[in-house]
Length: 126
Image (cartoon, rainbow, N blue to C red):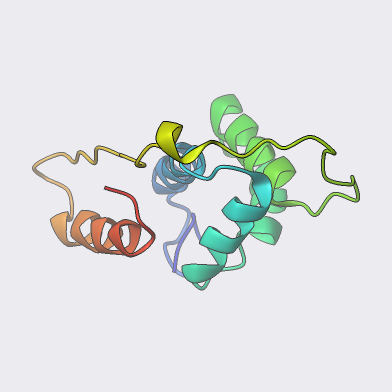
């Protein structure tokens, strides 16, 4: 695993770490709430929260990447706020499928995008 050598491997590849943060942030939008997001990220087998805590203040990352890591950190942290008393569920006739478009550059590692697609499909994302 990588993330710019912060988790292990990858050396100091900050560019890849920034792309990973951006991808995780974009993928977080398919989760309906923070608890759902935490559950989805447990599936990938990496404890994302401590990683985002470190990346949010990493001196070599861009401001945007740090903000993205901070956003994810905030969403992944358990909050001691009681759930709302009102029913916030979406009626079944208004329910929608989750859809995400993946794109990659020709010179990149296509197998990573294919693997990501398979994982997302297993989570119900089209």
